[in-house]
Amino acid sequence: MKVSFGTCTDAGVRRELNEDAVLAASPIFAVADGMGGHAAGEVASALAIEKMSSLAGRSDVRPDDVLHALDEANTAILAYERDVAETAGMGTTISGVCLGLVAGSPHWVVFNVGDSRVYRFADGELRQLTVDHSEIAELLAAGRITAEEALVHPLRNVVTRSLGVMPPPVADVWVLPVLARERFLICSDGLPLEVPEDIIAAQLAEDSPAQAVAEVLVSAAVLAGGRDNVSVVVVDVSAPDDAAEADEVTAPRKHLAEQA
Ligand code: MN
Image (cartoon, rainbow, N blue to C red; front, side, top):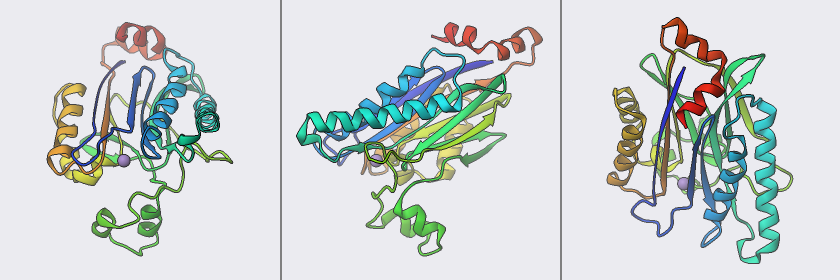
Protein backbone atom coordinates (compact mmCIF):
# COMPACT_ATOMS: atom_id res chain seq x y z
CA MET A 1 0.00 0.00 0.00
CA LYS A 2 1.32 3.37 -1.00
CA VAL A 3 0.36 6.55 0.87
CA SER A 4 1.25 9.98 -0.52
CA PHE A 5 -0.01 13.39 0.43
CA GLY A 6 0.01 17.10 -0.25
CA THR A 7 -0.85 20.17 1.83
CA CYS A 8 -1.61 23.82 1.16
CA THR A 9 -2.88 26.69 3.29
CA ASP A 10 -3.57 30.36 2.61
CA ALA A 11 -4.85 33.29 4.69
CA GLY A 12 -7.23 34.20 1.88
CA VAL A 13 -8.05 37.71 0.71
CA ARG A 14 -10.02 39.21 3.61
CA ARG A 15 -8.22 37.95 6.71
CA GLU A 16 -4.98 39.43 7.97
CA LEU A 17 -3.91 36.25 9.76
CA ASN A 18 -4.02 32.59 8.91
CA GLU A 19 -5.42 30.85 11.99
CA ASP A 20 -5.62 27.47 10.25
CA ALA A 21 -2.97 24.80 10.78
CA VAL A 22 -2.31 21.56 8.92
CA LEU A 23 -0.68 18.26 9.80
CA ALA A 24 0.62 15.64 7.37
CA ALA A 25 2.90 13.16 9.15
CA SER A 26 1.97 9.56 8.34
CA PRO A 27 -0.15 7.97 9.59
CA ILE A 28 -1.88 11.14 10.89
CA PHE A 29 -3.34 13.89 8.69
CA ALA A 30 -5.42 16.81 10.00
CA VAL A 31 -6.64 20.38 9.56
CA ALA A 32 -7.39 22.72 12.49
CA ASP A 33 -9.23 26.04 12.16
CA GLY A 34 -8.46 28.29 15.11
CA MET A 35 -10.69 31.01 16.47
CA GLY A 36 -10.32 33.64 19.14
CA GLY A 37 -8.95 36.76 17.50
CA HIS A 38 -5.49 38.23 17.37
CA ALA A 39 -2.66 35.94 18.52
CA ALA A 40 -5.10 33.36 19.90
CA GLY A 41 -6.75 31.40 17.11
CA GLU A 42 -3.44 30.42 15.55
CA VAL A 43 -2.14 29.38 18.98
CA ALA A 44 -5.14 27.10 19.54
CA SER A 45 -4.88 25.44 16.12
CA ALA A 46 -1.10 25.01 16.48
CA LEU A 47 -1.49 23.42 19.92
CA ALA A 48 -4.08 20.99 18.57
CA ILE A 49 -1.85 20.02 15.65
CA GLU A 50 1.13 19.61 17.99
CA LYS A 51 -0.79 17.19 20.22
CA MET A 52 -2.15 15.19 17.28
CA SER A 53 1.37 14.89 15.85
CA SER A 54 2.21 12.64 18.82
CA LEU A 55 0.66 9.89 16.64
CA ALA A 56 3.15 10.47 13.79
CA GLY A 57 5.33 7.50 12.88
CA ARG A 58 3.18 4.96 14.69
CA SER A 59 1.81 1.82 13.05
CA ASP A 60 -0.47 0.72 15.87
CA VAL A 61 -2.85 3.66 16.38
CA ARG A 62 -6.25 2.67 17.70
CA PRO A 63 -9.37 4.83 17.79
CA ASP A 64 -8.86 5.35 21.53
CA ASP A 65 -5.40 6.78 20.86
CA VAL A 66 -6.95 9.39 18.57
CA LEU A 67 -9.52 10.29 21.24
CA HIS A 68 -6.74 10.52 23.82
CA ALA A 69 -4.71 12.89 21.63
CA LEU A 70 -7.80 15.06 21.10
CA ASP A 71 -8.31 15.17 24.85
CA GLU A 72 -4.67 16.21 25.36
CA ALA A 73 -5.13 18.96 22.79
CA ASN A 74 -8.19 20.24 24.64
CA THR A 75 -6.27 20.24 27.93
CA ALA A 76 -3.26 22.00 26.38
CA ILE A 77 -5.42 24.80 24.98
CA LEU A 78 -7.14 25.34 28.35
CA ALA A 79 -3.78 25.38 30.15
CA TYR A 80 -2.39 27.96 27.72
CA GLU A 81 -5.44 30.17 28.23
CA ARG A 82 -4.91 30.06 31.98
CA ASP A 83 -1.29 31.17 31.55
CA VAL A 84 -1.83 33.83 28.90
CA ALA A 85 -4.86 35.94 29.78
CA GLU A 86 -5.25 37.58 26.35
CA THR A 87 -5.88 34.19 24.74
CA ALA A 88 -8.95 33.52 26.90
CA GLY A 89 -11.79 32.12 24.87
CA MET A 90 -9.62 30.76 22.07
CA GLY A 91 -10.49 27.43 20.50
CA THR A 92 -10.11 25.37 17.38
CA THR A 93 -11.83 22.86 15.19
CA ILE A 94 -9.98 19.73 14.14
CA SER A 95 -10.73 17.13 11.48
CA GLY A 96 -8.62 14.41 10.02
CA VAL A 97 -7.77 10.81 9.29
CA CYS A 98 -5.29 8.43 10.87
CA LEU A 99 -4.26 5.10 9.39
CA GLY A 100 -4.55 2.79 12.36
CA LEU A 101 -5.03 -0.79 13.41
CA VAL A 102 -8.47 -2.12 14.19
CA ALA A 103 -8.93 -5.83 14.89
CA GLY A 104 -5.37 -6.35 13.67
CA SER A 105 -5.74 -4.85 10.20
CA PRO A 106 -5.25 -1.35 8.76
CA HIS A 107 -8.25 0.94 8.94
CA TRP A 108 -8.81 4.65 8.58
CA VAL A 109 -9.83 6.39 11.77
CA VAL A 110 -11.73 9.53 10.76
CA PHE A 111 -12.28 12.15 13.47
CA ASN A 112 -14.00 15.50 13.79
CA VAL A 113 -14.71 18.29 16.23
CA GLY A 114 -16.26 21.40 14.65
CA ASP A 115 -16.84 22.40 11.02
CA SER A 116 -13.67 21.45 9.21
CA ARG A 117 -14.33 18.44 6.99
CA VAL A 118 -13.09 15.09 5.75
CA TYR A 119 -14.21 13.89 2.33
CA ARG A 120 -13.45 10.56 0.67
CA PHE A 121 -13.13 10.34 -3.09
CA ALA A 122 -13.37 6.76 -4.36
CA ASP A 123 -14.85 5.12 -7.47
CA GLY A 124 -15.41 8.54 -8.99
CA GLU A 125 -17.61 9.68 -6.14
CA LEU A 126 -17.07 12.40 -3.54
CA ARG A 127 -18.59 11.84 -0.13
CA GLN A 128 -18.40 14.04 2.96
CA LEU A 129 -17.55 11.68 5.82
CA THR A 130 -17.74 14.13 8.71
CA VAL A 131 -20.83 15.88 10.03
CA ASP A 132 -20.35 19.60 10.68
CA HIS A 133 -20.79 20.68 14.28
CA SER A 134 -22.31 24.06 13.50
CA GLU A 135 -25.49 26.05 13.97
CA ILE A 136 -25.89 25.99 10.19
CA ALA A 137 -25.69 22.19 10.02
CA GLU A 138 -28.37 21.96 12.70
CA LEU A 139 -30.66 24.34 10.80
CA LEU A 140 -30.03 22.44 7.56
CA ALA A 141 -30.74 19.08 9.19
CA ALA A 142 -33.96 20.50 10.62
CA GLY A 143 -35.00 21.74 7.17
CA ARG A 144 -35.16 25.34 8.39
CA ILE A 145 -32.79 26.69 5.70
CA THR A 146 -31.58 25.63 2.24
CA ALA A 147 -27.98 24.84 1.25
CA GLU A 148 -27.84 28.16 -0.65
CA GLU A 149 -29.04 30.11 2.39
CA ALA A 150 -26.46 28.32 4.54
CA LEU A 151 -23.60 29.85 2.53
CA VAL A 152 -24.59 33.41 3.42
CA HIS A 153 -26.28 32.84 6.77
CA PRO A 154 -25.20 35.14 9.65
CA LEU A 155 -24.66 32.09 11.89
CA ARG A 156 -22.26 30.58 9.35
CA ASN A 157 -19.27 30.91 11.68
CA VAL A 158 -20.86 29.49 14.81
CA VAL A 159 -19.53 26.04 15.68
CA THR A 160 -21.30 23.93 18.27
CA ARG A 161 -18.25 21.86 19.19
CA SER A 162 -14.59 22.88 19.43
CA LEU A 163 -11.39 22.14 21.30
CA GLY A 164 -10.56 24.44 24.22
CA VAL A 165 -13.70 23.98 26.29
CA MET A 166 -14.66 22.38 29.56
CA PRO A 167 -16.20 19.83 29.76
CA PRO A 168 -14.21 18.43 26.80
CA PRO A 169 -16.13 18.15 23.53
CA VAL A 170 -17.43 14.83 22.28
CA ALA A 171 -15.45 13.99 19.15
CA ASP A 172 -17.02 12.08 16.27
CA VAL A 173 -14.99 9.04 15.22
CA TRP A 174 -15.59 6.69 12.30
CA VAL A 175 -13.59 3.57 11.44
CA LEU A 176 -13.36 2.70 7.74
CA PRO A 177 -11.75 -0.19 5.86
CA VAL A 178 -8.87 0.73 3.56
CA LEU A 179 -9.86 0.64 -0.12
CA ALA A 180 -7.50 -0.36 -2.93
CA ARG A 181 -7.54 3.16 -4.34
CA GLU A 182 -8.92 6.22 -2.62
CA ARG A 183 -8.20 9.87 -1.99
CA PHE A 184 -9.03 11.80 1.17
CA LEU A 185 -9.60 15.53 1.32
CA ILE A 186 -9.34 17.27 4.68
CA CYS A 187 -10.21 20.97 4.61
CA SER A 188 -11.16 23.97 6.65
CA ASP A 189 -14.55 25.62 6.02
CA GLY A 190 -12.86 28.23 3.80
CA LEU A 191 -12.81 25.69 0.95
CA PRO A 192 -16.52 24.71 0.74
CA LEU A 193 -17.42 28.35 1.43
CA GLU A 194 -15.90 29.33 -1.92
CA VAL A 195 -15.74 26.20 -4.08
CA PRO A 196 -18.85 24.13 -4.97
CA GLU A 197 -18.60 20.40 -4.31
CA ASP A 198 -18.86 19.47 -7.99
CA ILE A 199 -15.74 21.54 -8.70
CA ILE A 200 -13.96 19.96 -5.71
CA ALA A 201 -14.91 16.50 -7.02
CA ALA A 202 -13.65 17.35 -10.52
CA GLN A 203 -10.25 18.37 -9.13
CA LEU A 204 -9.99 15.22 -6.99
CA ALA A 205 -10.83 13.14 -10.07
CA GLU A 206 -7.75 14.50 -11.85
CA ASP A 207 -4.85 12.07 -12.07
CA SER A 208 -2.51 14.64 -10.51
CA PRO A 209 -0.19 14.26 -7.50
CA ALA A 210 -1.75 15.07 -4.11
CA GLN A 211 0.38 18.21 -3.71
CA ALA A 212 -0.78 19.63 -7.05
CA VAL A 213 -4.42 18.94 -6.19
CA ALA A 214 -4.07 20.61 -2.77
CA GLU A 215 -2.58 23.73 -4.38
CA VAL A 216 -5.26 23.90 -7.09
CA LEU A 217 -8.07 23.65 -4.54
CA VAL A 218 -6.63 26.39 -2.31
CA SER A 219 -6.05 28.64 -5.34
CA ALA A 220 -9.64 28.08 -6.45
CA ALA A 221 -10.94 29.20 -3.04
CA VAL A 222 -8.74 32.30 -3.00
CA LEU A 223 -9.70 33.25 -6.56
CA ALA A 224 -13.39 32.71 -5.80
CA GLY A 225 -13.26 35.32 -3.04
CA GLY A 226 -10.99 34.01 -0.29
CA ARG A 227 -13.28 35.28 2.45
CA ASP A 228 -11.79 32.91 5.03
CA ASN A 229 -8.51 31.15 5.67
CA VAL A 230 -8.40 28.01 3.54
CA SER A 231 -6.45 24.83 4.21
CA VAL A 232 -6.33 21.53 2.38
CA VAL A 233 -4.66 18.18 2.98
CA VAL A 234 -4.97 15.54 0.23
CA VAL A 235 -4.06 11.94 1.06
CA ASP A 236 -3.73 9.33 -1.71
CA VAL A 237 -3.81 5.62 -1.09
CA SER A 238 -3.17 2.95 -3.68
CA ALA A 239 -2.71 -0.76 -3.15
CA PRO A 240 -1.04 -2.35 -6.18
CA ASP A 241 -2.41 -5.73 -7.29
CA ASP A 242 1.12 -7.10 -7.17
CA ALA A 243 1.20 -9.75 -4.43
CA ALA A 244 4.62 -8.83 -3.08
CA GLU A 245 3.59 -5.23 -2.59
CA ALA A 246 0.19 -6.23 -1.25
CA ASP A 247 2.04 -7.79 1.67
CA GLU A 248 2.92 -4.31 2.77
CA VAL A 249 -0.71 -3.78 3.73
CA THR A 250 0.00 -5.81 6.82
CA ALA A 251 3.18 -3.83 7.53
CA PRO A 252 2.19 -0.16 7.29
CA ARG A 253 5.07 0.95 9.50
CA LYS A 254 7.69 -0.24 7.04
CA HIS A 255 5.90 1.48 4.23
CA LEU A 256 5.28 4.71 6.10
CA ALA A 257 8.92 4.89 7.13
CA GLU A 258 9.86 4.61 3.46
CA GLN A 259 7.50 7.44 2.64
CA ALA A 260 9.08 9.70 5.23
MN1 MN B 1 -12.55 28.99 8.85
